[in-house]
Image (cartoon, rainbow, N blue to C red):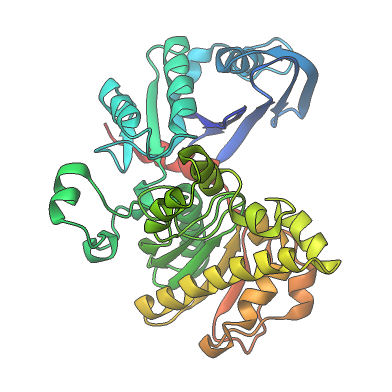
Length: 395
């Protein structure tokens, strides 16, 4: 079965075409700067033949144009893979959240309406996803479209860990609960550990990047996560505030800040950027800290403190720990963050191999043989996880 996976960003599109079963990637494509009329970048690869195409300064004013670029390449005489686009049987989307649909769902009109209903929960994500899905449904009639929602992996978290201390009717009538995100990434880590070490284990997955979260996994199942109901929760992010006392909002209003100023501070100019005053990109924050910038170092310390806080709580929830995994952009590349986190976990039996940690860029075991917890760096593959869930889905 040929499955196309689409990952939509606010100004980008990523595609991978898989042959399933077998997890074989046949082709991949990427569009950057969607919305540009003269400066977009399009890349396409046929991984069977090695054909590569990169076009710069392209006119790609909208998602439809970007999708067309990739689909046309799939059937092109040069570099193409398919005799007809109808060979694609299913399309899997990385989707964020939909009211009443928290798992893996066929993207019907009802599910899309649920995404519209909860745009307030994912205002930066749902509009772009809806637009892409609707466009592709028009372009590929007859194909099964599936949404692998970021909440899916966390659906089995026990109710007592999902509920807030709000009136129970808010949960019943409005769905107020901790939903969790980064499910495609954490579920990939869970699958990887199960394949390598067997299905019985206790692990904590640290997805650290522009958006970050921690997930406790027991025997392949999510049992707790740092995200709440919205993406404005949990750890501090590149420019989002993370966990915060909700009454601070009202306090700042009494201090004379406008609603727009407060919203921007929480979602655009907070997080690593707001604390460091340097950047939301940890690479630049680390550079500034190394040069003596105290605010940059403070931002790193706050970030690490939050990670350790959640790991400690989840360690107790799990009753111990077998594997600690770092993944995503920061987790895979920042030996500084990994070192600072692991140094604070000595009481849990974590012993880091400093040399392995410094040299590891992308994949490897970085703990000492004497460590009671195996510490791993595993590159996440969200698209593969989506392809697997899309293939396994039964109508």
